[in-house]
Image (cartoon, rainbow, N blue to C red; front, side, top):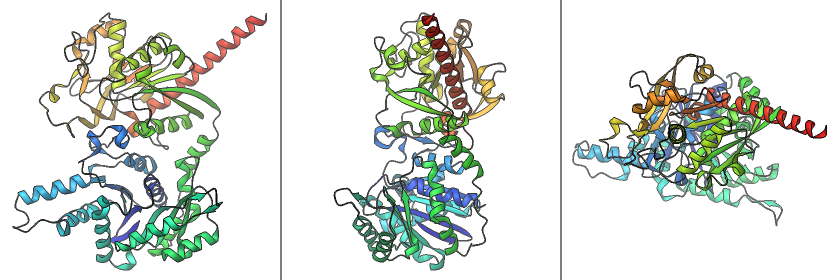
Length: 556
């Protein structure tokens, strides 16, 4: 991590070594949280080394969920961590890939911008990386810009980013730069010993690329004794007090407090002569943590989706349940259920113990019928139901099949020739042939009908939520479905696109075309998730009461 000052803005570059998935994003977000809590204006950006322009066309199994920003950027899931920790929106400028860098440089070459020069990695690619690294800081909107470098030091694809960091470190005054490297200190159970060699090799690789760390954050499962810290400091050429322990925590939301205990933010501020900054105000964060770790009750919720083998595929949904659980002072136990293996013969076995059922977003045919079966179970058994994007679309399909009697009802995404296309391709999408970045993306307004469940949840008639879809509710069927009991309680005020559907006859049944999970944070939990968890709590209480009465009757 390199902390630099340029035109009164501090730039932080986060690197990692030894292995991937150490938590560079969480460490970056934690430092940002502490600096913001001291009154600084902070943002974080992610530089990813893959050649895809963005993760929008990647299968979730490849890269986890695709996070969508307010302005419609399809980005790395780490931007979700940034927003959840900082409670501040990111944008298209906050996620840069190698693909974006090369496309910009190649487009400029085609325009003749390089005056006939041979276009090369050095200087042209590196210069474009540096320009992007400094871009947010030059806006004047931030005191600190933190840049996380994706991948691991030593990776071939990450070299241009590390070289750009080296050049910025050289170009800026030495006293304005601080380098922190996140690494792993493994524990060998057979030897009963922490091993520092991987960290030493990782730092050496970074130094060979011309970047010298001043602080090393050591991810570890065991506490780092003083002698181990001294060893890391000595052989990695950092000050003894600048080796930071990052122990595994019971929740990622504990990491800012752990980093505060280790003095990470204090060391950074001292290095830059900012000792007089006020202490971090973490009162709201601590209130959230207190509720998180001291729940008064528990509910069981089914997450029915097609990518459940990989937790990161539904990262924002899982985090939203944590936020909503804390808001309701309860622990939400999420049971991941693969929709491909749900059918009429086993649905009762899989879902009968659940207090709520969420049907997740997704694309494609695989697992569709299982989602429809789960929705039918929720509707017929009065189990609280929440459908997101494709989950909302499938509750429309289920209603059309089982209530309206259209047995072949389906989305044209799966069956283009269906006689009852209750979900159809959006009109503006019909001429689109390029897949990447062409969906309906980003924040759009939704007008909510008074007196509906949605209105009770949000408490207002106009909201804004983020979207990522090509298909929509087919308004040709709207009147018929409304008469049968499925109410369109929210619509886009400009296009009439149905955003929210609900069943007033059901205790809690709601489907939303947007992705509410993308705007949930610990300090501002998303209203639909909060209401869904509350409904699950009430359902669990009713179940317990009914079971108690039945048991009492048996003993008479």
